[in-house]
Image (tube, rainbow, N blue to C red):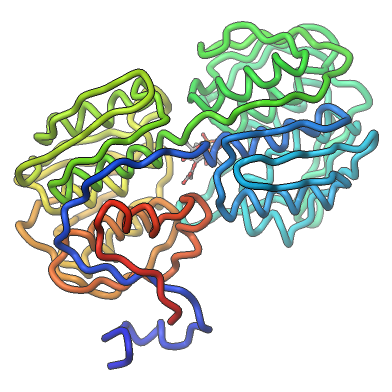
Length: 433
Ligand code: EPU
């Protein structure tokens, strides 16, 4: 027994780190504003590389991944100034074109500099990010697409080395609507010679956001928001000021938290249309919902009813809300089947959830959750951002105290996670272990 209770033995070897101490039972009540989306801002920061001069991004979330991306851009020769929710990026006439492994390994999304560096510099050397805790995460569609645009790409000593004096337009059909591959190829195509048609692309609101920013920078992109993008290459782009789209996954996380704790929360600054399926599922679980153009109020007065979900590319149910919904199903009335189609290892976190007493069985892409009337607090380890969020949500309803380790994962994607929950009335604190 130590100052924060019983812990699994393997955790006793950690260096001093922060943990979240959560005591379940308080219903969440209040209003929360949602910041800009992690999965948009990182790509928008990379897209600024396409134009020399100073671009400004606003509504930027205060998260660790933005700090890492800022550091990466500085290494490429940019001047990056972060102040409040505003980031000014000054891109030199000739940026460096190498993204080193020490930063890429910290954040897989660093791969998003590949397309703009190749377009701007005629070459890009980007460390291969490798797999992570949610799966193997291939890059074949990025590479095949760049080759179709005329680049020579090979993998040497852990780096993707891409070269092309001048990219040329091409017709590319993605095997799967990959978010990352869509962004890489779009950013490479905007200054390629001639027309590029990208078919079967991702249609996430974050893709629409980057398309709009590129158009404001002078790019010619048609079909925004559809599964086919047609790009007419232009010679050069110019800097821009752009407001980052709000984070629908953060908004969805607060909505699930409100439902699980049988509270009432107003989420502002996000378009509910980007969360159509998750909000519908919460209504099926028994929640009351009222929506406005830029926000919604969700409340719950009873134990939720289990809901089945199947993750798919947008507008399907987002994989980034799957762990939060598994957490909800673990305390719901009935049994639910959750099918994960994007990241094969995203169910790893259920082993941690079962430490709180959840009854979850997984088989390949499927998880069967039998709702329990009660979970009981325990020490658990977050293995990725969304798993971390799911575990904290479970802790908010578990009896007694839950200690969440691995909170650096949560810091990567949620701005002021503990502050928001405290403001909504949760009994949660960040403590140094
Ligand atoms: N894939 C390939 N080959 C490729 C590209 C993708 O096999 O060339 C596979 C991946 O291995 C994965 C699936 O396709 O199994 C989906 O990958 P996708 O490229 O769509 O995802 P991503 O760009 O790597 C982004 C988000 C993820 C989010 C997914 C799906 C960022 C930084 N990351 O990842 O966000 O889950 O899209 O919506 O934008 C998170 O925020 O927690 C997170 C993981």
